[in-house]
Amino acid sequence: MKMLINGEWVERDKKIEVRNPFDNSLVDTVPEGTVGDVEAAMESAAIGAKIAKEMPVHQRTTILKKAAAYVEQRFEDFARTIASEGSKTIREARKEVGRCINTMTVSAEEAKRIVGETIPFDSVEGSENRFGFYYRFPIGVISAITPFNDPLNLVAHKLGPALAGGNAVVLKPATVTPLSALKLGEALTASGLPPHVLNIVTGYGNVIGDALVTDARVRMISFTGGLEAGLEITKKAGLKKIGMELGSNTPVIVMDDADMDQAVELCVSGSFWAVGQNCIGVQRLLVHEKIYDTFVEQFVARTSRMKTGYQLDEGTDMGPMITEKEAIRIEEWVDEAVSAGAKVLTGHKRDGAVYLPTVLADVPEGAKVDVEEVFAPVVNLYKISSLEDGLERANSVNFGLHAGVFTKNIDTAFKAIKGFDVGGVIINDSSDYRLDLMPFGGVKGSGLGREGIKFSLMEMTEPKVVCFNL
Ligand code: NAP
Image 1 (cartoon, helix red, strand yellow):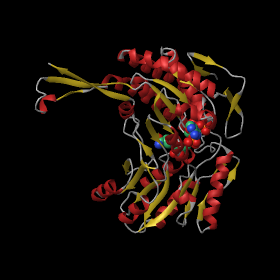
Image 2 (tube, rainbow, N blue to C red):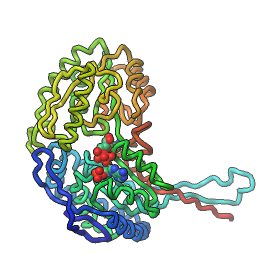
Image 3 (cartoon, rainbow, N blue to C red):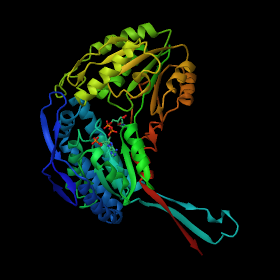
């Protein structure tokens, strides 16, 4: 595929190969963008920002709705692209396409609800004759950088709200999964998005990243990715708004009054969805001591039944990790935990990029799999004596995106809601639940700000005050 710069889909002699992580087969190539390409994209986006801010809301709405319809008409093609360039199975990929359509549709709707309010100037003596209000205006050029794990919908979470708010965007998708993003770009240009408003540069983050974040024309960096890159970007950004959607090390508490079947089923899905490469995927399962043994037995049995293999086979439950390098990385992390005393209850076998769903117990405190983000199909089981014990352990890491709790007791649920140090608490489901219009984001190392269309729009527009001296 080609990248989009200055209103044109362009090639470059130097290419990046996009390969299916299961069998390493070539899916497609994209241009290897350079710093010069980012420079050209920024120049174009500066023109695009002027065009976008003059676009009436009805035009933005129409384009976004048409783009959603474009994706819907090519539903299966989009799903196959996600499942071929990345880790997701075809069934997981279809779910992502459905969510992308929703994200674009809600963005079209939210464009109509960017409102301000009147200001009570007469609340202060001497201002009785003043009257006014504020409204929200576009921020300008937004630099959007996205990760590999939801290669379509996380791009929609940048483009939908940014365009709904009347902004221009320079997008850089993850190098391993750029095709879904480029296809969404095609959907928008085919739906009437004027040239310059969207530029997409494909290329390596460690080569073109600085140009994307330091450019003075950029008013906001909207980043989704890992903590390491997020920290590096914040250091270099300068005076710009920053949206940081980062990773986590997600806890789920299972209390002794939980519905066991429900908890087992939903925690298995939450642990291994998208091969565990999921920012809200379950990593630490904190299970009440009274039900620990039964839960472990059922959880391990259910996990062992998962069918791992080729993403495009309808019967596959879990695909390969994004690269063999990543699979080797997690294998080493588990080896480290095992040599320090952890027990493997199932999994921990690797074949290329395929790493079996793995359940660990007795993980020693401080092991990488305990304190870092695993971002892999590995889940740790811990025995807890009470909710308070579970909450203390849950909050002991430098992350706080989502958490889950299984209980039938409303008091326990409310204590958990107050006690978890996170951006979202899910009751009677695993942490792995997200509706695309809810506020989404974390605390501590999990990020800054919130996404979720309406909330992204608040970040991607600014209030302008108007005051009449009558
Ligand atoms: P990543 O390595 O941080 O990369 C994310 C994006 O940033 C890629 O496009 C990457 O480009 C680019 N990048 C890397 N270093 C950069 C730099 N110094 N300057 C500018 N751009 C840079 O993350 P990933 O492995 O793709 O994704 C996994 C991470 O994303 C996990 O930590 C996960 O939890 C997090 N995540 C968070 C959310 C959320 O909403 N909170 C959602 C999904 C994923 P290259 O691809 O060229 O390296």
